[in-house]
Amino acid sequence: MSGQGWASWNHGAHLWQDIDNERPIPPRRAQRDLWPHVPVIARLVWTLDGPQLVATTADIWARVDDVTDIHIELFDPRRRARWLWLSIDDVHRTPDTKDPPQGR
Image 1 (cartoon, helix red, strand yellow):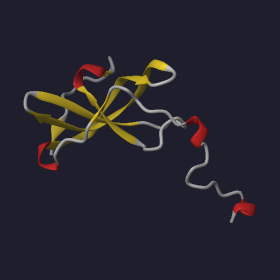
Image 2 (image 1 turned 180 degrees about the vertical axis):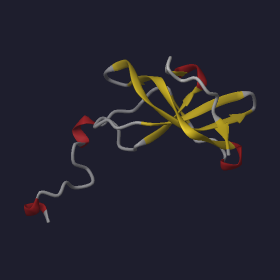
Image 3 (image 1 turned 90 degrees about the vertical axis):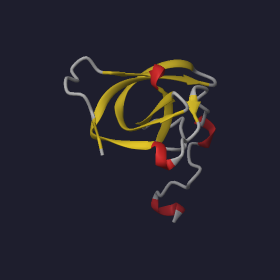
Image 4 (image 1 turned 90 degrees about the horizontal axis):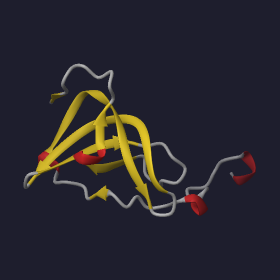
């Protein structure tokens, strides 16, 4: 299939970086859906490129041992996965968000 223009799973691997402020995945029973998804500004700290603010959406939150984490969506060629968990301190609602999120 390489002659048909399909990218392999590791296409762009030379761009991949870790995100230093990424949090571990909390236990599933602690996770709560946000519906509708909430527009946010997330602060990422890339291993090589440093800090970056990204406009995205939050779709899940979790609280374990008095620590709250937020699950966000991220489309970036430096990242292998599409989602990640960040501390609530690194995620802020966009100014136009008026209604509080409702958990399901």
